[in-house]
Length: 305
Length: 243
Image 1 (cartoon, one colour):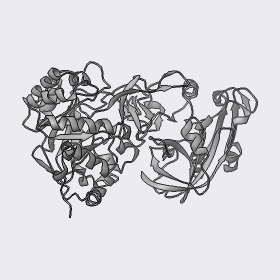
Image 2: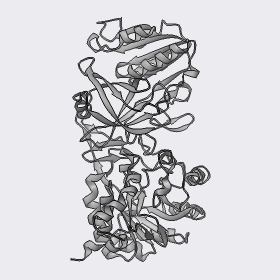
Image 3: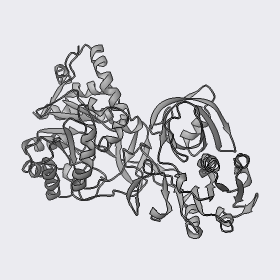
């Protein structure tokens, strides 16, 4: 028997597999396909203080082994998330869920987190300071250690729940930003958000995406994610959630070997709605294949030598 | 929605760049005409959403146009090959809202979803007229197939090489009808919107990420709030559309 359990900031997960925010809605579309209680948890759609329609379409472009999205944090706003989405989520998912939060000012981050802090099912707050698709917010908080620390402090002050800061790879020194978040009181770090990317349509000579640029995700970015998890997990003493291009149970193990405690699955859910289900199911077999009895035994093993 | 493998029974050209493919597999998740399937192709990350032209208990017929490398590769597949498909996506047309004299308007690659819709409306005892719009004679497909169903069929070509010279609206303006359903390019929709005299349903196309409502890649604003073309659409009612 292999043990797939991991502890994420004081909450035990049956397995480290977590569908990533923005690829899993509020869970109920996927609950029509399989029992989503098989997941470790999932991170629900990025929520802001006010409702947002997001960016104009087209919002999606295909790439080699990946995709670019510029959705722009479409969500009904925190009040409606709490009154309409969370009851539907609760009806199909009985475990603690990860609340993903975005904002355009410190006050907005704090407002939304304070509201979600009162929701019993919310186990963790994943604070997105790395969305590349909105102007004047999102990623701008994630590109300097000082700003990242300020958001962390603002959120820390309004919740007793574990605060996980989601970082952008579009920075020169991700380790410095992760350390600043840890010092400011973060309980965990998740990375990487999407890489800023762009496609141009040869027929029109214009960007494919209406917003011109967007976030590049999918298996093509996995080596970047592995590298950054490897770097950050050595520099901080709080759990790291790894993500970027995860499609298989092997990818989950690779991220844990790089130093991740748990692993998020993003774009894969969009091309194969059963992707996370398959990863959960395959994980014990793949652990057995590599002689891994307990995921904690291999966490960060790549750091040694 | 379900995900399954489907066997290709045939894959043949109807015109220079329009292909008809018949697939065998589970069709139990298709609930209405105008729904679509999302096809995984080797070597491409995102699936290709294609409308369902017709279906029965065991087979699906799709008609698609070669618009890029993905659909070009698809056109080279043959009987014996199989495809990974998400089936039964989107809302489809609501025939309960259609009138006794419904007109179906298909433009170019928007023609295919009209076929099963036409079949369904005729089986419900409705009087169905069909307007098929193309650029030129060589691009015309399915005129005979619609006639064989028993519908009144009108064809327009932009260059006048066949049928009525001009656009579908040049036929529509002289027709008598009490409801319409349409699928085709946006300029055609705008022209229809200007002259249509009744309620109707429009089937929209949009670049999609997932095709089943998870990514918010294809959202649009309607008078009744935000909708996802892939899940809450692709069919929207005339009254809710913001042009």
